[in-house]
Image (cartoon, rainbow, N blue to C red; front, side):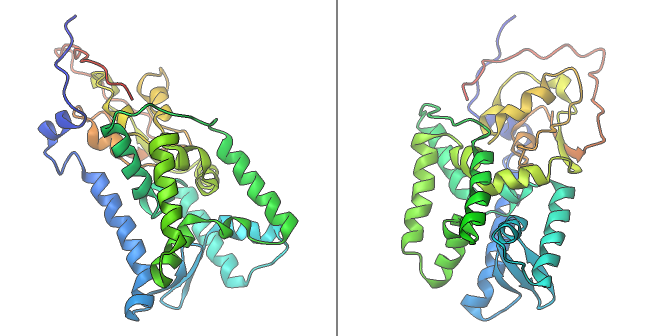
Length: 303
């Protein structure tokens, strides 16, 4: 069997779909992240108070309360019963992410995500080694530690070092030390641990992964019979261990791992249109036409 000609990462998808088609979900995510960031900055910067607060807790149009349920949980464990509006806000956010997927927050809302994505892009360009990879369960232990510290100290412990909240406040009051925090995360992902912050450290991502473990929104390798083993999806996926069970397994083509961020990059990057967004009850696969020969694998890509 002759291997197909190797093409640089993403070039086959661009040739098949065009540049916009091969970056559709990436562009939508950046737009979404910028939208949420601007919403919070319109008030302090321009006096347009659509949203008051931060991603930790906010009030939209003076009516809709939204509270980070991880913050709410820390507050309860610390012995502080929040106001009724905060409790309502936490329930709203919890239900929303439980339905659409907890780690959608990580890839579509969190302002730190472009930082870690940028580190991964440069990591790949420089062809650096994979680096130190903590156990996948490390972020769960960190999350548990945060909750224990909150209970022992009576504080919302993570907010003391939360880079998301610090970035919001830094953009309003001046960055200062915040730049050092953002740079540290970037350098950690670049030189120490590939996808290290979001994939192995951040307790917020761990919490939302648990919240969305049974969520409706899923990515499915519906057309997995068309896969030509180019490995592009593995190269761009921030949690690439979630792909194999759906792509190469004998059971459902759905990516059911709570680690999946629903970022859509596997959909963008696949020239064969193997992946698509669907719901968790859609287990159908697309069978290849009988007259179509199986695709020839091309040179595999290290990831």
